[in-house]
Amino acid sequence: MAQKVGFIGLGAIGRPMAVHVAKHFDTMVWNRTAERARSFAKQTGAAATEDLAALASWADVVITCLPTSAEVREVVERIDGAWRHGQLLVDCTSGDPAGSRAIAEQLAAAGVDFVDAPVSGGTSGAEAGKLTVMLGGTDAAAARAQEVVRVFAAKVVHVGPVGTGHALKALNNALLAINIQASGEALAALVKLGVSGAKAVEVINASSGRSNVTENLIPERVLSRAWPRTFRLALLDKDVGIALKVLQDTGVPHDAIGVAKQAYGDARAALGEEADHVELIKEIEKAAGVEIR
Ligand code: NDP
Image 1 (spheres, protein in one colour):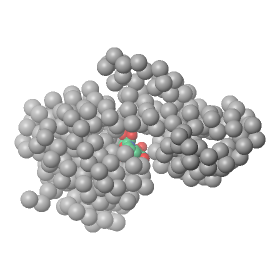
Image 2: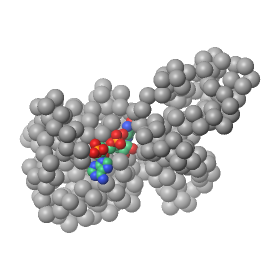
Image 3: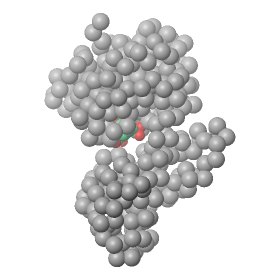
Image 4: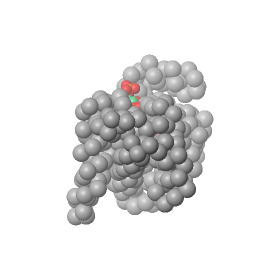
């Protein structure tokens, strides 16, 4: 059966995901800044609404892509009486596991299923329709969510019950954060020793220390001095905080992630809410008194 999809949150990554949704399904969008929803509708042929309840009562499946679980909860509460039995909420926010479980419980009372479906692959992956999506929910709800999220994904994996998608996403991003920090520190030291950033990265990328950070992010953003803004450092700081909480709750040592949380928190305070995640390296450069080139 053709699904009607309501999409909430046309931000840096939500918008390109919604473009794919609108190509495959009858789609209605809502965005806090209504003008963004209107211009999306003009460009894609989707419907736009300023009324969250109207979107929810029209859609079979609702997708949210908002900063944190707190905003998802806010939206779910604003929709309140308009939820219908048999609907599905697919939350593509990088949210927190406990927040997701609470939202799922609240929706279950109205007969609405919930799947956490955070994504990785960045804005370029979203544009290409090649994101990785990790699903947390029951088998039946995850299978239904997969039918929709596959339109913007190269890989969809059902990882466990509600909340596990968000836990996995936060821990993946903690690994990204640690890689950015460690790579920035290593390269700053090498540049101070007279090794060019480009040569250092060439060697690391042919050696065991290589990662997505050294293979892609540093050449494209740091060595080039381009510093594009695609994923806010504030959001990565939020993800590292969620990861830290997951480790604390599961009773696992969290030394490395604890150090990263401190560094990203400090960088967020220094650089503000709009800085890109890779700009942490600007703080390392500043402290080291060197530019990685
Ligand atoms: P942005 O900050 O670019 O966009 C946030 C979206 O949420 C906007 O549509 C914004 O509306 C909306 N919003 C913010 N506050 C509220 C609120 N109180 N009520 C309703 N809507 C609100 O974030 P991204 O698109 O980058 O990220 C969205 C999620 O995806 C985050 O959880 C992030 O961690 C995750 N993510 C992002 C990636 C990336 O590369 N950018 C990669 C993978 C995951 P408005 O237009 O009015 O500001």
